[in-house]
Image 1 (spheres, rainbow, N blue to C red):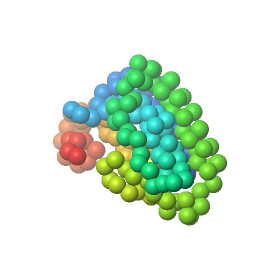
Image 2: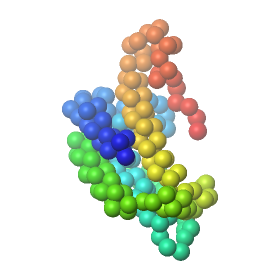
Image 3: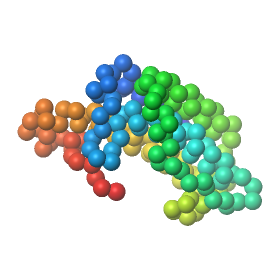
Length: 169
């Protein structure tokens, strides 16, 4: 919960009032900009974490999750960054309220759902992934922003791992 609660505040502190030159470029082919990552986080709030947790907790399980469209955030891209940050903060607040209301037990955390690619996963794994997903995207935002200075740092580029090319999946 501490990470999940802080992510909207971290994003706002990092990105609010930043010039578009910092928030719209990505860090290479197939990567996302800071704006696009915020839109993706909103999409994940509405279609991933709590909906999948509810699928796991639904009686009669384990049940299969609906597939998650990794490009499902594109409908949000016309919005300005301040609106994206506000929407994410609101969506996250709603998600955390829903999570608290579920009052999960250790038995609930051990319950399983069926992921389309991984097969059986537990509620505990899903919640842990939610936290690491936030941290991963915070790192990606920092990488996208750092890439704007990759040439300006000159020879120090060799010592700054954040400037390494994107790793293939």
